[in-house]
Amino acid sequence: MQYAREVKAFIQHHFRHFNAAALVDAAEAYRKFIAEGGGMLVAIAGAMSTAEIGLSLAEMIRQGKVHAISCTGANLEEDIYNLVAHDFYVRIPNYRDLTPEDELALWERHLNRVTDTCIPEEEAIRRIEHAILEEWLEADRKGERYFPHEFFYRILRSRKLEPYYQIDPRDSWVYAAMEKDLPIFVPGWEDSTTGNIYAAHCIRGTIRNVHTVRGGIEYMMALAEWYRKESAHRRLGFFQIGGGIAGDFAICAVPMMRQDLRWEEVPLWGYFCQISDSTTSYGSYSGAVPNEKITWEKLGIDTPRFMIESDATIVVPLIFAYVLAEE
Image (cartoon, rainbow, N blue to C red; front, top):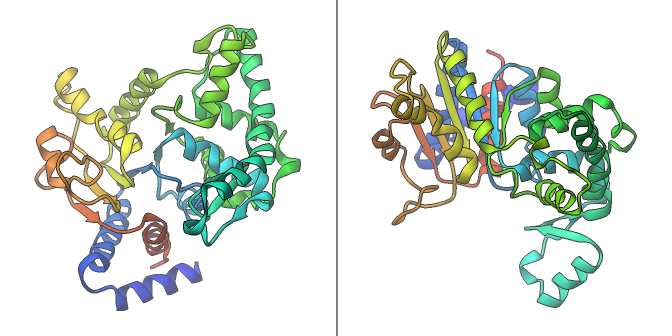
C-alpha cells in the first residue's frame, strides 16, 4: 500500500521524541508482534466509529493485523450508521460556539451531535432499527439467541441494507469483521442506542424473551474461551483505543481466568498499548499508567507496554498505516 509506506517513512523521519517517539515505538512493536505470529485484540472506546476509524481499521482486519475486537455498543452501531447514512451527516466545525438554543434546533431537526458531527436519526438510527428488529423478532419467534454483533452480522449478510449504502463497504470495519467472522465482544451493549431500542421493544412486548440478545456475562465467557484457545498456540496482544468498559472488560479476562478459575497456565497479555487523552490522576482508570496493570495480573513485568497521551483520532490511523506498510 503506497500511502502506508509514505506515512511510515514520514513518521520514522519526523517522530523522534516524546509522544511522537512513543507512537513509533508502539507501532514498531505492534508490527513485530504480528510478524512473529502474535494475535491482537483491539479495544475501541469513545466515538471512533463516528470518526470513521473504519477507513484504516477495516484494512487492518482484512490484512490479518487484528484478530478480535472489544468495543462499546455505540461503536458497533455507529459504524453501520455511517455506512447507510453518511451523506445525511451534518458537520459543525464551530460547535464550541453553539448556544443551548442552537442545540435545541439541532434536536428539532433530529440531529444527534457528537462533537462536530451530527448523526441523522431517521436515516441512520431508524433505518437500522427497522432492519435489526426483523432479526430480533425472527430469533425471538424461533427461540434462538445471538450476541449483539451477531445480529449486525446477520443484517449485513442478508444484504437488506445494501440499497442504502452511502460509502464503500470496504471502509466499514464491522463489514470487514463480518467478512472474516471476527470475534467481537461488546460489553455494556445495553448502554447504546440500539440497546435502548431493544429495551423499548421488550417493555412494549414486541419481543417476548429479553434474553434473545445475549448479554455481558455470556460475552465474558465467550472471551475467556477465545483467549484460552488462541493463547494455547500464540501470544495475544492488547491495543486499547481510549479507556472505559471496552478496554477494562476485555483485559480483565486474563486475571479472571488466572485468579477466579485458577487456570494458572493462561498467559498474560503479551503486548499492551493504550492511546488516550485522559491524564493520570487520582482514581483515574483510563489515565492509569500501564504498570498499574501488573498489580492486577493483566500484564507481566516483561510485557512490552506503551502509553500515548494524545488524540486517538489522530494517532490510530498513523499507527495502522505504519503496521500496514509493506516491508
